[in-house]
View: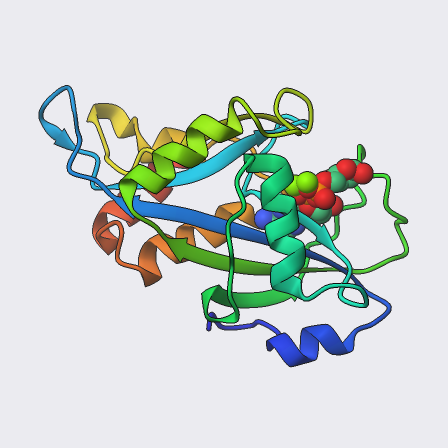
Length: 203
Ligand code: APR
Ligand code: MG
Ligand code: MG
């Protein structure tokens, strides 16, 4: 569990809060870019309707469904596949950063506090490819709430291109730190390489 977070129980105790669940789906891969740069892992994110990058998932109602059932429902809408998510996939929960200035498209009340719950699920490469196919074809949200799925480039090319450029895009809420924390925690990118990418994303 990442530091500075609410436990699942603490988060659920806030019945006046709104709750949102998002998941990082990823796999290993042997694919190489241009036949020489190992891609190593496929991590799925999405281009949202608001032009921001985020993880698949969405608002859930804990008084009517478990967090995980609500997340699976959102995944069916956004990815077009029924993906079971379990309590063991839960990484952490926290209060969302104040969105009053950055999330003007949100229809939720500005007085309601939002708690975001983050999950990580490792899959086989072929399952990830299946998700990508369904997200672009059968998913009901495709083309409006979700503009498309994107993979995260984990390599660094000359001039900081690759992961560094990716991290310089705009992300919803704390999706960027959820991604960076996961890369470190799961050892998907070497710490010194991640540090370099983070530094180049700021320049
Ligand atoms: N970290 C923090 N907050 C996040 C993250 C994240 N990684 N991802 C999304 N959010 C916030 C969004 O700003 C949004 O307010 O969580 C809330 C719900 O997430 P969405 O995925 O946007 O919710 P979803 O249920 O899929 O879509 C409903 O329709 O009514 C609109 O604006 C509303 O975004 C909402 C969308
Ligand atoms: Mg949704
Ligand atoms: Mg969503």
